[in-house]
Image (cartoon, rainbow, N blue to C red; front, side, top):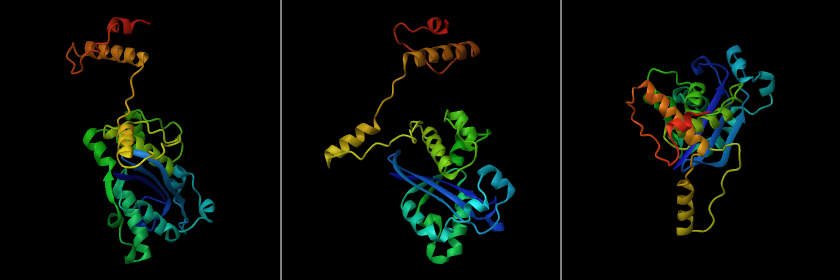
Length: 248
């Protein structure tokens, strides 16, 4: 399955008021793994950037003055996302802006959903964590995704973080290693490729001894607070006991 994690930055919060897209960032996933293909463009909006948007993105009209307008990258962008499932946080916002940009180019460009499917991770998060904050930053903290380097909003950076959040939300491995080299396409053809692909998807990561001890200590603490009524059975690893785990 081919998916594209997508984020945009804009000159303001409302395309209905003429705000424009100033950055697009996309990361391609194939079978839930990064392929290394990315699409990132800064765009000249030909208008002022609202103070709030400038503050959170760090982008200025001066910086964007020599960047291409959306119309010059539209074809390349649509080629990149065509046929994929787009993974977007608060999809109505980004899709609304992109549909507006496509609409300015004429009816021949269609709308985003004419080119790709859309999955909204904000809706997924609200289903899993009802009544809680489900911003990207909040989800990173809750799901253990490291976002300490996110000082400003950036479309490509946010797409990287969202990819890890999405896999965690859907029970996949959280750490994609997006900043490291991605795995090469398996060599061979036919059954050799299928076997290599299956082996890669089934890679198992085992907990270290320190992680197991920390888990035991955490379960003991939860057990005490709940009066022993927990849904998790204790670890049965020989030699590991709650008492041992709790000792300094």
